[in-house]
Amino acid sequence: MKKGKLGGLSSYLGTLGALLILCIVLTIASKNFLTYSNIMSVLKQTTFTALLSTGMLLCLITAGIDLSVGANATFCACICGMLVKGGMTNPVVLILIALIAGTIVGLINGTLLTRLHLPHPFVSTLGMKNFLWGASLLVTGSQMISGFPAGVMALGSATIGGFPVSFIVVAIIYVIMHIVLTRTALGRSIYCAGGNMEATRLSGIDAANVLTFCYALSGFMAAIAGIVSVGRSGICNGANAIQPYDTDAIASCVIGG
Image (tube, rainbow, N blue to C red; front, side, top):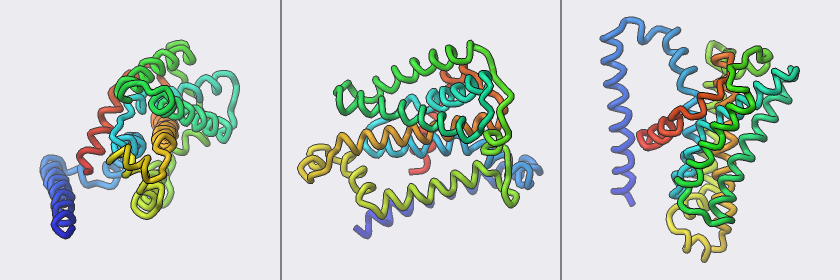
């Protein structure tokens, strides 16, 4: 056990060491790298991937994958754009509808995997990615939409105490996720489902519900990421649904350990 903990610690230290070396090199290469404005800019730009990787992490822990997270984020942003174009200006309603849409997509992914017993989620979520690409183009008429209300824009562009709101949201979500995965029965069930599905079933855990929950939460996180992207750029673009945001999320999870 002690050896395993030391191995995990060395892995984290290696990642942190590589990050430190990268920061040193970039600081030497550019005098503007460690400036306040650049650091805040980096924090804003990384929150989108950070949110996607949170949901992706749950899927990877369960020995699955969700290749639709990026397209889902774009789809939720486009749903907001369609409503704004139709005259909806209430930010609370827009955000709630986006969150519901993203969660429903995640539930569908989970249902396809656990209830219809489709092949590995690589196949089903890749299909969902392409479906959402087409749906995003359809709801926006293949046009970029702008004019989002300030309440929606705030999540991606506003600051509190000098820190981006989106970064604060990510930090809170990460703390909650850490507690859930390490301190709760749900977290243990998620790890158990990813380790041995048969052992999970024999332990009395409904593995299907656990998996469905993970994919639904992945969709929920994608929706938040979509709202953040709208707040940061001020527009939604259905063509972004085909961008490889999913691979960025996977890489973040793998590099982070």
